[in-house]
Image 1 (spheres, rainbow, N blue to C red):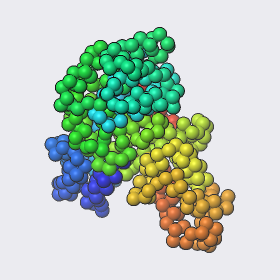
Image 2: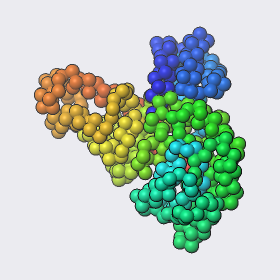
Image 3: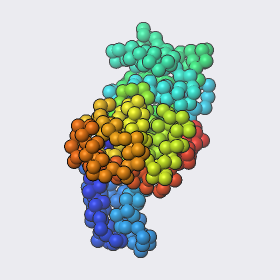
Image 4: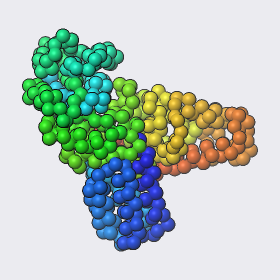
Length: 451
């Protein structure tokens, strides 16, 4: 995710490597490269210029403070804060008031609306303990109703459809009545894809919104279309005044232009991000966490939240304590690999771990990707797995023979593991490691309070 942007920003911030403090000269050089990185990521030049002007202003204001902090570290923090603000500042809640709560899903053809509708139903059912009803109002696309039906069966949600009715307003209103009559507390109205220049179709979605009076209208957009996605969002918002944006196909977006520009352009929050086709790959959009991932810092909070879905609370707390104490060992790493393999979207999840984005860069990651790593760890003795510092050259040679790899591969893995462990420990101290206790809980509670 956002690999191209991450690489370019890393290069831009490297201009400050070795500098002891920020000066007008090194700030100007770094800011120029940051602006180029943003424009290359398909961010509108005006947005990129305003962003870097703010970065420059803050950097100049901090020229003579924080003497103990290197110039590069300080600039990374400034850029992280500004990226977070550009994308909305904090996670936006969703409105679940009413019986039922109604969500109207809109967007272009092929943006992933129907798949998102299924994912949203699954999210609200599993994370909010709701009873969702999917209403099939795409009366134009062949097999759209069948697709929604299959998704409803897959996730155990209700489905309302009228295959012979070509009036989406009637279908939506009948679906809401069906929800009231049968105890569903969530209605998700899946609509046909439409172009903003298609006046008839835009009138139809406007009529749908007026008729059903949804709690929220969510605009679904393919993040890989970059600036086109932003322009489309603006055109739809001018007509619909939607409540929030959903970015789909984020796992395939190497640039990040849509994520960085939409909030600025339409002044509506990004509420969800979707990656992959599986129904459990929908996440709340946390600007701060995305900013950290863009800057190669990982996203340990989201990672551990996902781990909590696999672990019980006791195990999650154990992992938190071990990372805090810098006691994360090969047993923990092997356990994490096994848990990650159960969670799907392996490369994305691995990139949440601080230091891992470089390890996985350029690799085609699948569920067999860690066979070599597992073989290395399984060739260690139990004592070695629990005490990485014991691995001297003779032990490494024995491990290499046991797993069928050469000593250079073993050394490279050990170095990467050590870097990852140090980064995790560093991040746990700087963030309070709230993922498993404080920070992640705070993020969740903020989201709940705003519903």
